[in-house]
Image 1: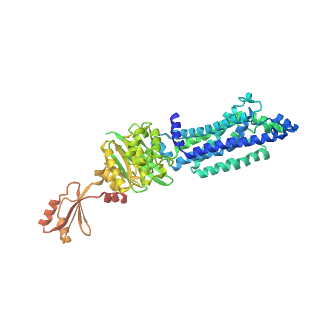
Image 2: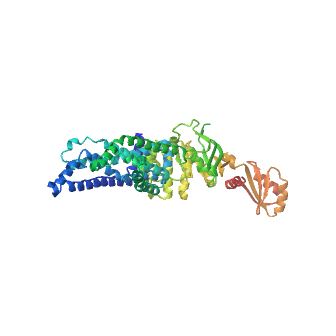
Image 3: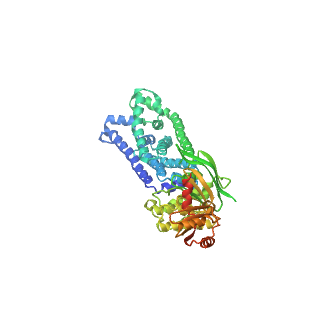
Length: 279
Length: 298
């Protein structure tokens, strides 16, 4: 396993797109979260309204979503919107192997067909880890930056780091599957973005609000999106919202099981296809 | 003698096209085995199957008689096109080859790059290479760690005449070291110049296989002519020993079983019978003629 990772690292470390992805994620994650955090802060807390009774009440009710311990959750939620950035890299990593025909050469040189898939899975794990580390650093920094006396509660919601990792790995696995099946980067990427950003959001809204069924929780991306539900402040607007928020939090373990099964099936399919097909 | 590779009844179908039809042959240790055939005859398909990147519909193959799990790591291979990471240099590409195949070490990488004359460009990206340089790198990758068995698919593809000659010399040198080389080619003289054994494929069928001399040289051909061709033919009708007489426009060809044609006897016979020859040459049957004969009659 370690040997496979070393070989994949030889491929990745000099691949410019990897460092581009790294750079863009390292700018986007802090950027979007800081932006939202500052807006929230300005509107409710640190402006000239400071003595405004309404603002004080709001702050009392909601707190700042980027304060500990909510920082872990809030940052995970907003960062997860940008899964398409690492997914571009994931699709490139597999479609490159096809276009360079190195998916054949690796096998000719001595890997078994299974080892090739395992090595690719290691790639996805590496990319998921990199994005998770960036996310965690951002959450940590924002938690300190926006702190208003809750530093002591920093360790309360650390489970969101693990959930963010699982969510990233699950969604990047879908990206990998598309690249693995479609082979052409542009088409795979097009299908991935079109489905994940447009089609599935329409489907979710339709099932959720129009048909009013819980089936939307089984859609490929929504399944793992539910691992990091809308942050706590969204649950502050009335009883219905509060109930919905609590339900979403309680559903996380179930969604985790669904996600694990679905992701396992994706990789099983990759192994099976790889074992049988002409390369 | 140990069989390095044994192929039994391999068949491969692409939709309606039969790429390989019940092909069997053995590759003995230490030979240079040429797989010869026109484009689309199934050469690369055969190599693809024995290297585990294509799945045969029926049939089997075994490497080193025992078919060990890691058989691919004992074989240096070049299949169809040079396949490398475009954004990496020659050295970094070979590091990946080395890590996957476990053949050789860092020093060997520089050595094989020297052998194929790529040392001066070893740090340039693969994407900047010419076709010939890419081919050389692929050969270097196959040579890495000095494997005992080499599988080379059209090894001189894309090389200039000097490069072709160099690679042929290299193959001969490797063969002299006792390595087993399995080589696919559509170039007849390449096979004639370097191979000890040959299998000829046409449209997925194995036409003939075995020792090069046995496959290609069944007959001696004597070409002769005289000013009075009719008189020559009359005289030759009474000559014994040959198996076939073919009248061509500017010559007559006599076919003899291998090694039995004697030019001086023929010359004396004709002269004694009143025909003076103005042409008399011994001609080993050309590989090309044999090849066309083999591939056209089937």
